[in-house]
Amino acid sequence: MKKDFDDIKMSITDALELPLDVALDLPKIIVVGDVKVNITNHRGIIEYTNDLIRINSKIGMIKIIGDSLEIKNVLMEEITINGSIKKIEIIS
Image 1 (tube, rainbow, N blue to C red):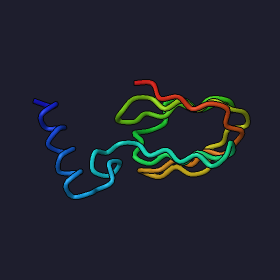
Image 2: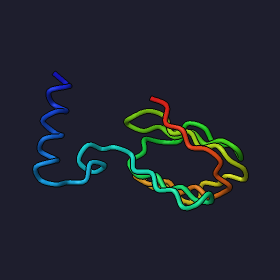
Image 3: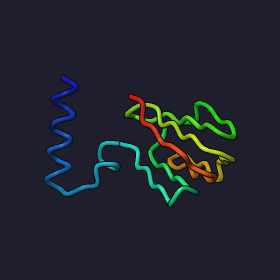
């Protein structure tokens, strides 16, 4: 049943040409070089250290590995992370 509902949402999204991240509540990850990551549509911070940040999302956990990582901005729907970004993983 959930699969049918997701298929209907996807069809409507395609027909109306809506952005997938907005219509399906998917995370949108914007990476600026190796110094900044901006994540929208998150579901909270799981872990935060200087070299690892784990963030919950609808599709699973987003894992950011680097050096001198700092969360600069946390809003209800958006997180901004600065530092030396080495790796970004999505674990579903």
